[in-house]
Length: 166
Image 1 (spheres, rainbow, N blue to C red):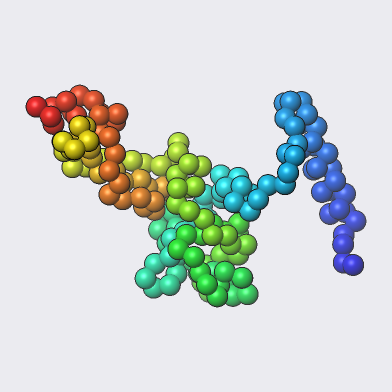
Image 2: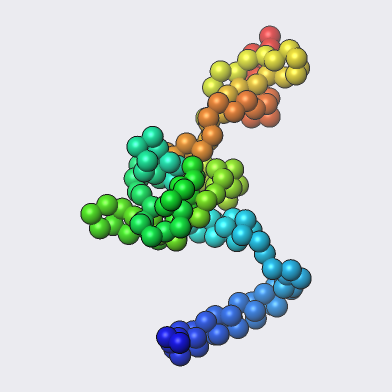
């Protein structure tokens, strides 16, 4: 069946270590198995270097200007999503992403809230809402996750928001 006894023993030891650590912390196992979204969101925290947004050229732009394509034979190659995360990036003639999953940019922002850079521009009074709003952009290592999002500028910079009203 092509199973390695050494790898099976490693998996068993890893499972035991994780179960022991969870028990020490007082964590209880899930009553129901996690769905795909929960698994992808949890894996995303450790795979932030392998995220990317599809470009007009058909490749993906990742953090720090990394460009990659989905490897041939990968199920998502036929219908590539707008945002992906890859567990493995392999560089041969090109940089190929393997073990790819479709994600949402909001998941990246939530997982990397301590790493993202936020910029606020164009503060203005919004009389219909009764607050000062500004356009926010969110980027992870140069990869823009959100741009032009309207936010309450008073929560970000109260002093400047007060000056905008006056």
